[in-house]
Amino acid sequence: MTEAFARLGEVMTILLMAIALGMDAFSLGVGIGMKGVRRSDAFRIGTAVALFHVLMPLVGIFAGQYVGVLLGHLARYVSGGLLLLLGAHMIFSSFKGSGFQSINHRTLWGVLLFSLSVSIDSFSVGVSLGMFHSDLLMTVLVFGFFGGLMSMMGLALGRSVGRSLGDYGEAAGGAILLAFGLLFIF
Image: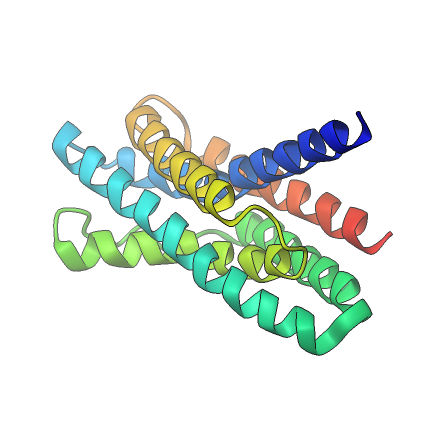
């Protein structure tokens, strides 16, 4: 029974982290969506974000497993510290402003740049999760699903939602990652 609760806790942690990471894609999607996005562009952007939200944590998990072996018992504190820094950066960025509004979402390079910019934090979370030996396939698929879904939701809601909601969404995602960083450390 305790193993079932431990597994449920791992699944809930991965789900909440995926949602927190997807908040960045959502908030930037709102900003781009306010400029007007066709459904085909929204689908293409969402698919690219989902792919990057799978690839970046996957690379991060492998790097984290390697670093975890090197650090041994200190890996827990290092991974918690990484999540704290990432969460603080997301909160700071949400109040500072995103600066990604000039991306041309109709070009391949614009889509790739947008996807990379909202997925780079997934690499850091992947490093942290790699030190804990989480379920690799489930983790990257959940990250990809929520990253793609939340970016498409942000693009779709961009026309009707104010710019300030996107900033608050990124700050909320940062707060969730801060909380998990503290949980990993303590």
